[in-house]
Length: 231
Image (cartoon, rainbow, N blue to C red; front, side, top):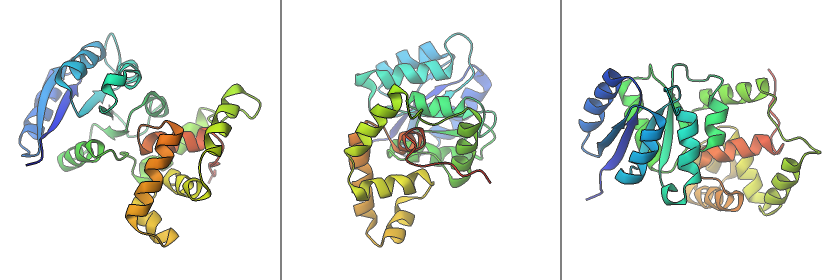
């Protein structure tokens, strides 16, 4: 029997946490292992409960969700913890920062219950919670913040060195991942099996030091490998 997905709830609104707990605990394949009212408590509970997925509110008093996500991502012992950011709007000014900090994706607080449960399962499976619509919003936000690697800056050289480690096929797959395509869609585009695509994605993640697909999207745009199109 597959172990239940351990979920940690981090939100300063007790009523919202209670609603999430009832929803999550009603599913046979997941359980709430802790509740945090701020980011610092979330990091502490992530360590003690070994949660698989943290539903993290971006805006909390004291240590906010963004800082907490950075702390979780920077801790080698929490490498398997996936963070899904909860936002008032699906795309706001903190989304790009959240993904850079190590979040696996984001979800609007107004999402339907089934969307929330699906998001937990997707994150626990190591996939990025980035729908095509969310990816487009991410790109728009990224552009608005002046995202992209400075060709003369130190970051550009680092990205260039990392990208050189990729094979031609891995680069091709990375570009399609950045476009918001799923493994099945990429497989159809490249006329290969989804398993082959998954292998290329995993190798690209390992070479680029990315935690998941969400990080691959950020790297693809920040490195300049993919240039957002302004419609």
